[in-house]
Image: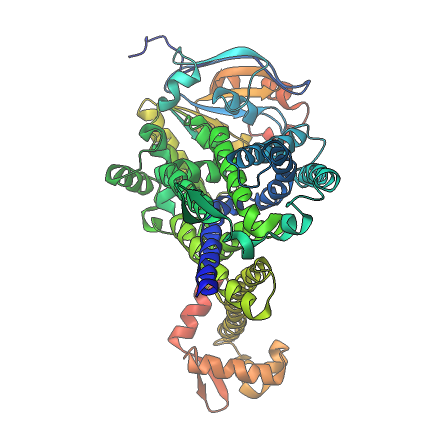
Length: 371
Length: 247
């Protein structure tokens, strides 16, 4: 009975972590700052290690505070570098976070080799053990600490977005208008970055520094493909994050691999699926539209060709079905199919061996030429 | 409310520099209320920077800017801004109506959400720019001209007294250009002051009644018929004004 119980708790932690990450991810994707979350998730390591030295505990609130501060510092560093105009944003990110991360790595390998803070956990997290770390208060066990931390993060993110929805939307869409209207974009920006840092620190414990980026960016990028409304994008992002967590978890159990791996893999697969099949902007929809446009365009060429020669001496030769492909320099099979489509659409009618424009076909040709 | 002789915008000794390179040198500019003013000048003349400085978006190295005798911070509510169309991401997941309602956010203040009243104001503004059929359209599906109209509608709902517009005619079709001109002249007739960064020298005399010639320095500023002279243009653009032969 007990292992089953633990499994449900682990799954719950995964779901809550995914939900908490999916919310700020939406704004990072829209602000083209997903790389910043990557930077933050790595750069918080020295903050975590230093706080660990002070507290000798991996779950102290000071740890979260220190790591969050390091995350915000990373954002400030990157922006300072960028402001010099000597370094572009991507390079600034690429310079900042490895530097901070490596400091963390050195600190860990030098001073904590015997302590419960190892590189595997840093990179991949330890979701499978997260439910063992119970909150003990008043002599009772109140369930996994992670569940409270990430549940709290989810609520905090949700509250921030609900309260400042209008401001976040405006600053993300048009920061200069926001500034002229008196909504301090910098304040909103750093508010958001603080939340991203806190969420990352919380999720770090469960999924590690690499996969937290998948939780932040993946669901939001998937949701972005699926909707034209910011509110729906936020809701979808959370739902997709939860689905990824559940499916990933269910895959991890039979294959007996660290849970964070399958979750990230599923995140990518779900994105790929959306990328293919979403209506209007998915790859399949685009391909179908291209094919449709190709035939539409060919039919338009055909009716314009017929219109141009209509009533002229050469009209008979030009509208002979058997010779159309020669006049238009089309492949014979292509020409046959275009004629078939055009007949089906009643753009043209067949009289003996010749094509004649219908009223409809003539209108289309004329409209196209007028444009 | 304002003293009758108050300038709509008064810029004194404004210098803006990016690092040590000055973009605007010691600009003095008085914009009387109720004019439709074009800011013209070659690329890199500092036209956009001037507008951004007036809006407090760039910090001046020196100088002072007043709007109806008060600094911008005290006058936010009466200033409407139309940024360059290309300054935002038109793939942002939102609708036309939503973007226009953003113009009311300043009046709403922090946290408070737009409601029925904002929606109605936005609908009215969309009608004024001829975009009422596109209310629920996703903004990525708009043409350049339509995007510009949406931006104008967003400024209209601000119900400002002073409008600052950065190249509203940039890359729009002829129909939209006419619609925008009509709208700008309507604003002026209602006593608004409209300042427009403008590129097309050919249309300055037709569209505007005041003009500021700018090329890092302020070359000249005043009513179009006195100010928009070949001598001033030559000073602004150097020798490159051969196409102005119709003047």
